[in-house]
Length: 318
Image 1 (cartoon, rainbow, N blue to C red):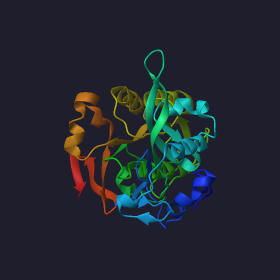
Image 2: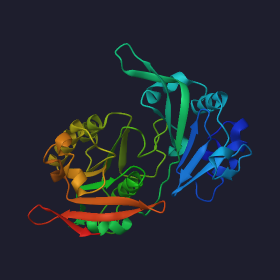
Image 3: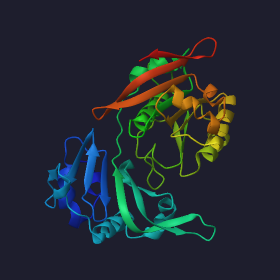
């Protein structure tokens, strides 16, 4: 168990979560909902935590979360200063040391202009355990490189299938250099502080010596700021999906910058269907596409696509 995970919960609740945090393979998520059993999930399995900290497959045996439990956990997460975390809470999440991240639900407090100011009366917490899986992208390097340089790449998958994990590893490989090419300056526009797992401005994930991270700002603005200030050779963005993000990335590509992006999706037909929102030619920014899937709790490559000499997309691996 890492030091960060040992400190994840208040001291008086560590017994409840001790067995979970000492599992050989840590779960992907820990869900804590008011008046509901604590649920953990990962690798295609679900368990419920009993009052003594042991695990059960039966919902009826799970420990029911009380309002005081949620209150103590949130106080611990915010270091007893929730106002200092209002900006993150307004987005529905908190970042924790070690790159871990929690989603939060509850009652929305609106600002005078109607925007979300913060959350109160918290009713649910979803703890997403951060992982850095070094080397998961190395076997794909020959596919994404041409003439010693990476080609603009789009990684596609449904939620929870490893696209952010693969993105992190590609960033590291591009930044440090690899068997297919030399190290490059990589700019990361990390809006939700999830790629680098930034905490208090410091990256928690090893993304490489030539990587510059701009965290907490909108993706489109972050891309333009990185171009103006850091002279990146590669720009990485996770989970694109807005027209303004596409415009910023298109501008980056016209500046000779290689794109390294992810998006939610299932197959090529799904990507083509996004043209109504993202524009008819948005896929032309990329030269390679990797589709991921999840089987038996593990993510893997489903298909690989590349452009042929006429600019048409060709599936080169099932």
